[in-house]
Length: 193
Image (cartoon, rainbow, N blue to C red; front, side):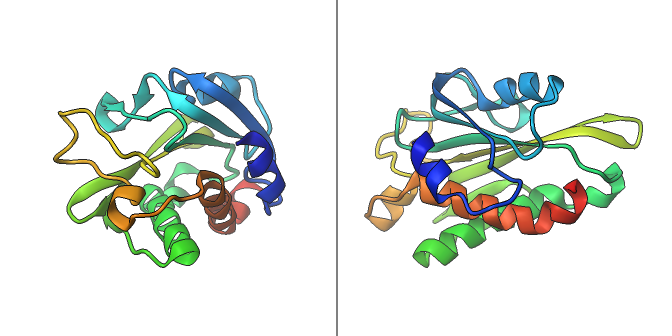
């Protein structure tokens, strides 16, 4: 996965540095540790699987082994927090646009951060801004997408789905990550350079 992402990434900042884990508790937790150490701006922390992924309101995010997308983007913005109004919604739109541009399938957004298809959750965005007053220290953008998952725990079967279940085909996790990074860089470039 790491080699394929590195080969396909067509960005100048976002995703150029990749930290990869085959298995991790949470990409969001690892990214926060790395951000505190001032890792390179635009770094993405990607996991093949997560044991304890974090969703909104500290809910657990299910990430099957080798089937879904779990990554966190680390950015150090050069703007004040008020310049990032509706930021999470913009990120969700980047993912919706990525799936549309790559495959021609239209996901919906349940504002501000859920990706929905046929009334079920396909993915979500978790944005955490760490600030000092009005100055942002760093932002973590966690992305979880159910890509090729075919089975969910009983408690999720009625509320979660995947791209594969809905569209009856396999999808490239790496291709989706690279397309998303390309799109998010366009909206972020003036805020991070």
